[in-house]
Image: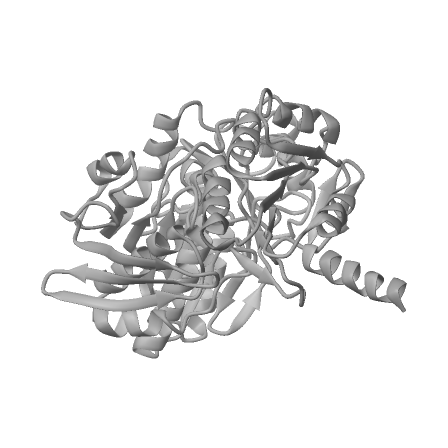
Length: 489
């Protein structure tokens, strides 16, 4: 493909390259670039691709897209200066892969909590109601029909998104559901993509190390809906008006408290392993259930039903299929123990999500609610005391431990959390080593208790200053009971 064809939709400031240069690939990583490829210099969180233009040229890059003219050491390489190299990467990637986003119906889901579950539910509803093969891009992995590919982040870089969409189109997918993070929106990873449906779940404090304020966070989230033909909004959320103001096409609202919504969840019945409710819309009241406990699961179900309706799927069919949908690994996941207490693994890593899973457990616990949690390192410090306060307020026992400390000292993270537990009567136990903390919780669990292992969810690893190591809480629980059985022999 020639350079000019790749740059048709790019906002160019100046050109020092032949538009007929033959391009054999696109790269934004100087470490992996191959001879004959186009190098796009983007600015990351920790580094700036402009620093590596010389390296890319030495490895055979035939042209560079950049925001600043290359320095003298790299001037021998042809270049194109653009206004925003991240947007240009998205434009070039779309062109390189033949604009696959235009060949498939896309559903984007954004919000602080619920994205992974909602995308999984929408995928299952589409496939079971229409028979159409559906792709998914998200936190727990990327899927093409029934095939799962690994995922490094919630929403990958624009090049990977278009590569995945190309694979989905080539393998017969008619739809794709995408988790769209605020980072992806601000960093233009979905720039230029038009979504058939955009879904807003909720907004609560997170990523405030990346977004200065909640208002900024909401504005960034709202960008998805200016790129969507149809929008589904949870109007029970305080930031719903920001989302609605940005919506470009038709809007469908859902709620469990506001009867003016287009779709309302009524007659909610909470169980230990599911939630049942009635979906009320104009002229119809349909009973359904979802095999994931908690009031938040009603919101997730309503989000999936709203998306289905906006796609033209009959709500009665969607509600019937919803009852057969599988839950998501690490979201209110019950770990089998064979004991008279319940162990739940949940990805809750924000104050709001932690409150949701504890309140859910309160709904069916016959005994105490024990909450084990930590906070990630190199991430928003403001939420740490807030999570401590939530755990202390709602739990019978709060166990503060490590999550993914990354480059931070775990004990310092724990100190930040403990500042939210000052002057509380809740029993608080601090055990820095997460494996030891889980074992202590299991040692002290009593009949009827619910033990929540919060924060890790689907993750099967732990990241610390010495690197990434295997850590699957399901395995830790299993090993605990195997060891206990061996002791008793």
